[in-house]
Length: 425
Image (cartoon, rainbow, N blue to C red; front, side):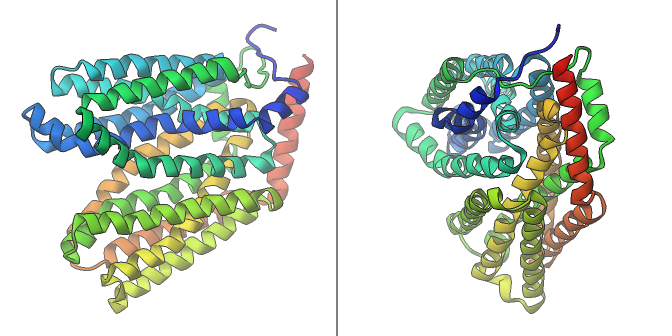
């Protein structure tokens, strides 16, 4: 049938699901864009000096990169549903390679900023399509644990990437960073070309972006899971936006000390993902989401309480309690993402793209909002109140928007029946 790519047979899918090479590819394709974001951060002052610009202009190599990541998710996800995972991935990485070469030879800061935007536009294809591939080759009950495993490995990469970027810049200059990114993108593309077969599910002729979006938006479970995932991610953006102002301005600590304390929240998020990998195969994703929501609510309520008592004017109280929030946050984000991309498996790319776009787009605004709360107040109260409000809203979405498990299961069975019927056509 025209416009269809057959899903790999069960044996082939099982081989993919147990392949360590495929798992490694999922990690590196997810990480190539965000690692390329953070690896340049230590070189921003050098860029500003070399190009004779203000540091705020050099910062646009990061902010426009984030815009590119957001737009890429909206574009590449639906394209992967229509044309297949492999061609869109390889096309995106090819764009990243060309843009990275453009970064190497940039003569002005605007040229570098433009090249960075296209670098993100191509590279972020791996972020959105990796989630779709996970849904293609794993059962619904394993999706959350595999997303958590990929995120956990990615977190380790993100933690070391600023240090790596700083070492490369110090030893070889800032352009060497883009040589490294170019080589990494080529290696990932070659790995995908050699070791990753097409995984996209069969699709009926005539189905497309509009039909996929229409069916997803009309599905209460999809809307609920996406809202839950996006809101949970905003806790990270809000706290990260306000944290530097609270620690450095309010508490009078150094930026280096802030960096060390903030790393504890990243470590807690990593631990949460590793715990999710362990427990997800044994428990329903709804139960794990509620467990995560409970931790988020308890931690954020405790931090608000510490704000009233004044205890979290010391970093140990503020970040120690935030670590509880972040462990729960990992459970909520991974399992709600798994729920969202499982509603309509053949449109997993579109679902993943919409979720990623909302997460990044709203995150940019919430980061600014967090910075405003942290920078325009004398206590931690506004920021901790905002985090609690987001946690409560997240729980309300799960309670009032996502249907009961029986309804979700029924929808999944109906979707499976429709898919089987499509495959027989």
